Structure formats: structure tokens, C-alpha cells
Image 1 (cartoon, rainbow, N blue to C red):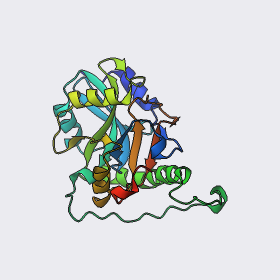
Image 2 (cartoon, one colour):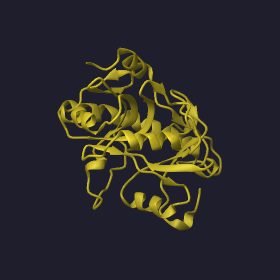
Image 3 (cartoon, rainbow, N blue to C red):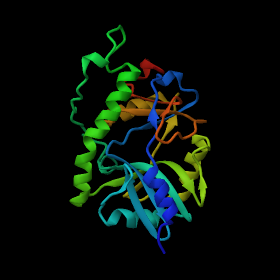
Image 4 (cartoon, rainbow, N blue to C red):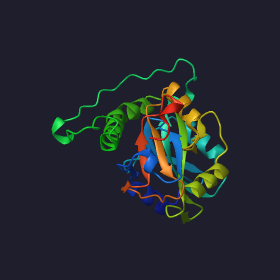
Length: 242
């Protein structure tokens, strides 16, 4: 058996949704999760095979990764969004991430009070640009056989049914039911936006960004989603919702 060609075609046309320019405090009933960095991919699982797709192309990964995903998968077929990352394999202790410079052409940045990297527009733009800058290095490392984990963050298709119009919280709950976590296969953690201490802890663990998505949001493939935001994690609970 093999992966359904129709499912592979859907995956080839898929592009991730993008966060909108709203502040986290303006996202209603937000679920918050860390950004795992690495490479954003769509895992296609079914027919006894698992394929990882990035920017419409199946990519080369170490053989242990699709094998681990198949062992962890408990349904018939699925499209699972996530990250191929080394972050999930690191110890929580002593994690420091190098600051990757992101060029910001001054002509594109409104010169007003409140601008800079805390401005939602600037933060989203820098987040997307940084992901593009880092992708070639991750792809090369995967070809060379470097060990990465797959951190699943969303479920977009399950057993013949598209889930993009299902609320996020329900997609998260379904995701928990179709993957058994292992060393190489993880299900991304998330908390309510009121759980500030966890968000502060994520900052101390070296996570650069947090994603804020409304629990009732739908998935808008290839589009900017106004019910999603990205921001740096708070470094203190006194910061409150930003």
C-alpha cells in the first residue's frame, strides 16, 4: 500500500497559514504554544507510509523519522502540521539560542511611537523572514542525517475528512488521539492565555516566540489568519496579557 495520491496532491498545494497583525491580548480565548523553530512541514500519513512536505515538495529526512511517525500513528490517514526541529531533543538546562540578525529596511517600518520589534506588524514580518532564512540549513542537515524530532501542532485532515473548518481546540483534541508520543514524535504543548507562569518558563527555556491562536479559529491555508498572533514570550508574570 502507499499514501493516497489525492492526499499527496493536497499536501503539495498546502501552504501554512500566517499570523495576523493583532496583539495577543486582542485574540479571543487564545491558546498559547511555543514556536519550535526548525522547519515547518506537513506530514502525510497513510497506507503504511509517512512523507514530509515543505513548500509543496516531499523532502529527504533520516529514515528513523517516518518510521517513528508510523509507529506513533493510530488512525487511517492524516495531514499533520508541525515542525522538524532539534529543539525538542535538547535538555531544558543551559539552552541558549543565537540571535539571528534580521535586516529591517527602514522604508518599510512606520516611524511612530510603539514601532520596533514589539510592534505586531514588525514581529510577524520578522518571524516569517527568519523562518525562510533558517529553512535551507535545516533541509541540508536533514539530508546529512542529523537527528530531528517531529513536533505536531495541528491536524488538518483525518480519515478522509478535511478539518480546516473545525475549531482549533477540537483539532488539538483529535491530534492527541491519533499520535502516541515517543522520543522523536511529540505533540506540541499549549496553555490558556491566562497561564502566564508557563509562558515565562518558555522564555527561560530559550523559545524566541509564542503563537496565540483563538480556540475557535479555523485554519486558513496560505492566508493571513486574523485570529492568530505571534509575539515574544513574557519574561515576567507582571507583564500580563500584552
